Amino acid sequence: MKIYNAKIYTMDECGIIENGWIELSDGSIKALGSGAPDSVGADDIDAQGGTLLPGFIDAHTHLGIIEDGLDFEGDDCNETTDPFTPQMRAIDGINPFDRCFTEARMRGITAAAVSPGSGNACGGEICVIKTAGRRVDDMLIVNAGIKFALGENPKRVYNDKDSTPVTRMATAALIREGLSKARRYAHSIDSYYSDTENSDPPEFDAKCEALLPLLDRKQKAFFHCHRADDICTAMRLASEFSLDTVIIHGTEGYQIADIIAEEKIPVICGPIICDRCKPEMRGQELKNAAALAENGVNVAICTDHTVIPIQYLPISAQAAVKGGLDSMTALRALTTAPAEILGAENIGSLTEGKDADLQLYRKGDDPLSLMSEPVLVMINGETIRREV
Image 1: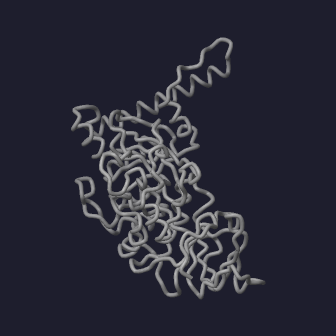
Image 2 (image 1 turned 180 degrees about the horizontal axis):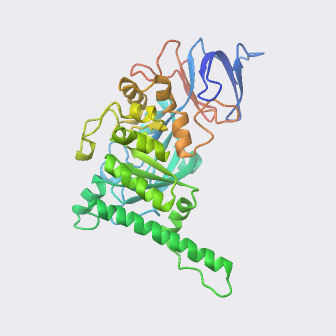
């Protein structure tokens, strides 16, 4: 199948193809080029000069793990019976039949990172999934890493329980203790396999097992933090344990953008179009994403769905543009940047060999505008929405 007569934003080194075509086969991008294709078949699509983009990626959500229109029975986001739960996996709590998946697809959002919540010092494993499917296992792109949380949320949750942690010190200490145990656990495993005759394996520990890919830098450490001081704590912990680190939210990142850039730590900004709903968000400014990007930080934008409904991801990026973010950087913040940050190598750009996740807008429509909707959405080469 081919889509032709399109303005193609490849979001890779090929840049923008003003008048081009793309060929899809077996769920992937087979080829693309400028001008007209050699031949056009009855099933091929004339884009009529419209704008073709990769599908958008929401870099941080609770999609399907906090279900739409339900209270406790549909909220599987925070296992707040224990403040340190790295062994929890978001994939086990997602309902792919939640109607917000449909709303995401209809707005051109073809993938999303689904995360445990921030009620615990460690919430569990984040997964990146396609937004189309009936079984989450079939939607899975990658298990990206482990979610940690600093600042207000763990303090508030466990203060209500009269239990640790109730201070920022205790939250950091719990994370440090858990990572230290996992490091010692890994050393015990190595010692056992180096001399199986004279040593015993360590007793199985689900928490330590879950953290081993993190210590091996096979997964990333995602730190929920809003305030600048909490961001610095995340960087301190990352340095102590040599973690491949991502900041989620980074609301006051503009105050220390140069420091974050020096550490080469990416930031997933958002929610952007919400109020300053809690004390640690009182420093929220529209300029945040722009200030980070101007200092060289790799920036993605998220909704934190259900905080902001996922279909408003594009206008979250538009709000960041209003705050000074370059419009092309804003598009990257919904495509290539989240793909890189999440370790989802096969999505995020219209590149030969990558998944055929794409969206098409009518000629003249701004993909980030509130009033725009894609006339074509495809995931894995399957047509999800078509009005052209």
